[in-house]
Length: 549
Image (tube, rainbow, N blue to C red; front, side, top):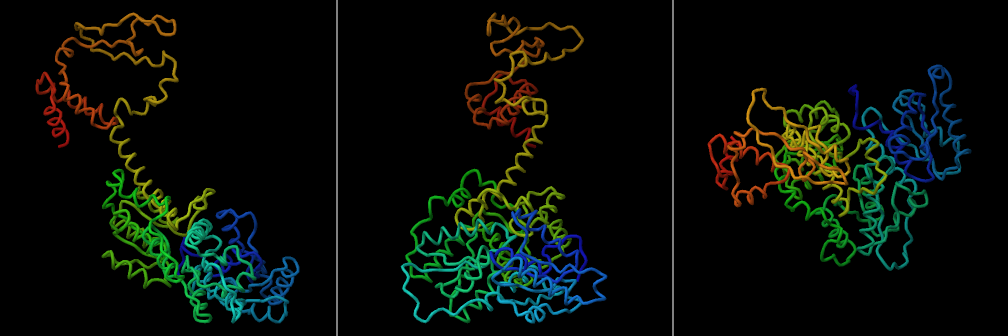
């Protein structure tokens, strides 16, 4: 076990809390010291749930270790039963309480409670959070699922369960909604979503569905495999992250159910076309580094490479249980997978590879900020901003749209910052320049440009002719028709100013507006240095070549 400041996963009892909190009528009695109650804040402050997790802590203190801590646990279990009246109870120990070996499972069984009690054996010093969530859901299924009736009633449409979404999951709420809509459009009814929003009664009837959809293998795969072994219930192998994977998922569901496969994508599938649009072509070949849980890393690598044209220069995961799958994925992109839960190793690899975009967790977001590299979060662990109030799935066709926006926008912002830096001294774009689209709201006097200071030496000047005109009833003497004060210029400079041919002016108009002024000034300076009187198209491109060196 390694001491670290930050960690990708909590101990396994936090995974059990995620399952208990996701369900509606399960309570978790956790044998834990007073300090281990910190985990509540993960749900109330980060996920912003409107309620506390359904967890009762024994909260023993140091002085209790010399007494009967087992009796403390039994009292906590009795009180939780009386107060919360759950339909099932989970019991277990935190990493600290595991050391005193009080056996919560045996103690709860001795109480003979009138509800199912599921004892959790979660080795805190060998396993971590996602494994704890997976083991908890698996044990709940083993203890609660009922064998379906031999003569199942006929169904008008095929049914499935969605397995894996939990509390504190990255966009799980929105993914469930998106995939439920997709399945309904295919002609499949969703019977149960578990553990998220499921009751004990829902889990009991899991075996009645025709098949299972495993959205998050880190949590739902073990339960799906057990359901297949016990009840011959198939499950999907494809996670619908990205446009290509969503199509593969649809094909797999249609194969399992004998339903016709749709001939084309729905109208909201924009990401595929956006990725091929002109505005996205400059993204082709961008070097991307990917790190997170196994499911999102494998999917992100495929999306980045096949759908957006990025080059995957490195990837890795903290999900040691799925290290083989991630290593196989890395081989397809010619890189070596980094399997670690040490964020410092990840930062070292990022420094060595110098990618142009990082797709990672909240940890990689901090690394990217220090390195000045664009970053998008694709996986837990996440922070409060990754539980948005808006609808923002990651899965399905709408999820593919969200992924495109989320990944491309950091790169677009990087381009904007590059342009701002490039034109920082430009007269139109410097920090003191007013926004052009707000100019009409300013008083006329504010539109007066400052007079440029001339050299002290006397020189004949030629003033720009100024017609006498009136604006809003005010005589505008000394102002041009645009309301800008005439500027004195040396006569010699005016006589040396090159003129633009109509063809050159037309060609100049093809240059984007935000660089057009700079191109004009550079070309005029180039022409003046060479003594060219008339700027032609050739002069324009000669100047471009000169200043591009």
